[in-house]
Image (tube, rainbow, N blue to C red):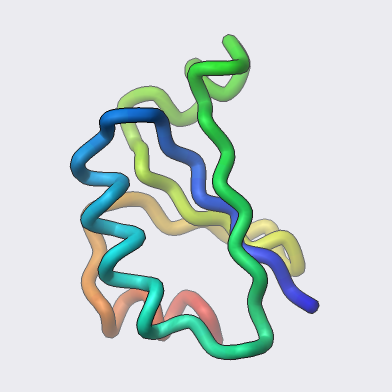
Length: 77
């Protein structure tokens, strides 16, 4: 099963919006993993001003907020 990694942090309202947007669009072929960037200095450095960021574990591709439903669906293909 393919995995989508959502880089976020607690209390991030944009992260909550992104999850609300993508949840109904995700097909059965994906598992979601949430990663709190505040637990790693490296992740804060990489994603701190870009969160939420969603990464595909199968391709390594990333999409950062803001994005809409069509952009997310294109990202999955």
